[in-house]
Amino acid sequence: MSASEYIRVGTNLFRIVDQPMPDGTTKIKRIPWKLSTFRADHSKDEVADIPKYNGFCIVPSHENYQREINSFYNIYEPVDYEAVEGDWSHIKNLISHIFGDQYEMGLDYLQLLYQEPLQDLPILMLVSVERATGKSTFLNFLKALFKENATFCTNESFHSQFNSDWADKLLVMIDETSLNRREDSERLKNLSTAKSIKSEAKGENRIEIEFFGKFVLCSNNEFCPLFIDDNEIRYWVRKVPVLQIDDTGFLQKCIDEIPAFLWTLKQRNLTTRKESRMWFGSDLLQTEALRKIVRANRSFVEIEMAEILRDIMDEMQVSIVELTVGDLIPILNYHNVRAENHQIRKVLNEFWKLRPAANTLSYTCYKLNFPANPKYSGSRSKGRFYTVTYDLIKSILI
Image 1: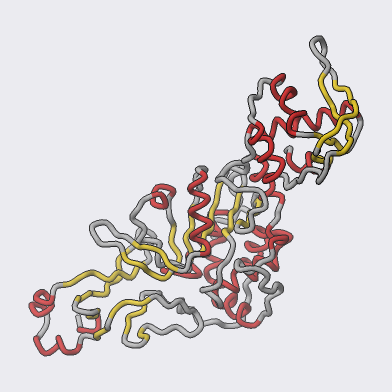
Image 2: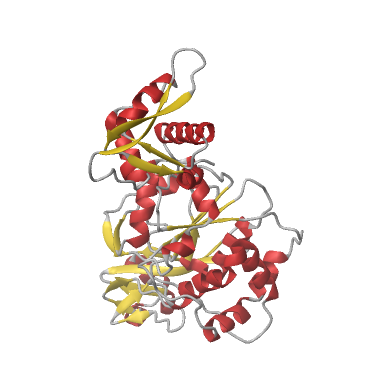
């Protein structure tokens, strides 16, 4: 053993070791070490040979990596593959399978991760109710690609106040995601654009560190894996189909092709340009899988309103319904839905992005004829009405 296996950061001594992992690989660990123990194992002259740093820093880079920056020890780990031209057909098949018709966009996402690690990127979520889709294979590929800078995180550890195991990582990957509380979604959204966070380890003080992590989530729940509001621009949701090939060695073949894949990333040009702080334009993130989750997260009152309006359109054979908040109250009451005026107005204004007529105007008001065998009928009325189209209702209901 030599002094090169140790570092002194500030006034603290650390020993750099390779911790064995269950899969046969190793993980770099920095273990606090006592100077007295070092002196017991080495000659006192070797103390002077220990590399000295003023402190730790986190500076992510894959193409121009530096361990020491201005006398600070960079705890971001190198991705030390040697990029060489070659075949990466298995990786291409994996990316094509995961991203489908957005294949080039998927390549852009990986290229940005590699070449621009500080660039904010959308929260990538892979969903499928079916098994054997390759979602976990993709996560394991990302782990192999970015090595120590990618980590797996459980739902429990994401909820925990102790976040030091993932706070300094490029990729935070959560398999079998179950973060269906609104506060979970808000936290994910805030973290996806945060520039710094408080990192805390058990038994240690919280410290503020730079944060550049990107989240990749996987779930077997296609409808409610987490709460996503309408018009959300931070999530990129992809439904992943079942794999048609059963190859137990597929992941290792992808890992073997990483040097050739990185060579390609270095040569190719991005097919997208920066359109938002998450790079990709919101129109590119509006997938059917995302819309399905948004629809499933709608409130009971909103769904009932949409169902009622669809019934009116079908029964009266119209594609547009004009209504005021007061028109809906008795119909909702008939269907045992108790809703206040402000709840209905919130759905119309905030969720459906509708605005009432600027002035009191004449419109066709639809009402239920009570009490026996209720049917809808239309009559002329006046008010500041909202205009709801069939296309809007169709987009709301699954």
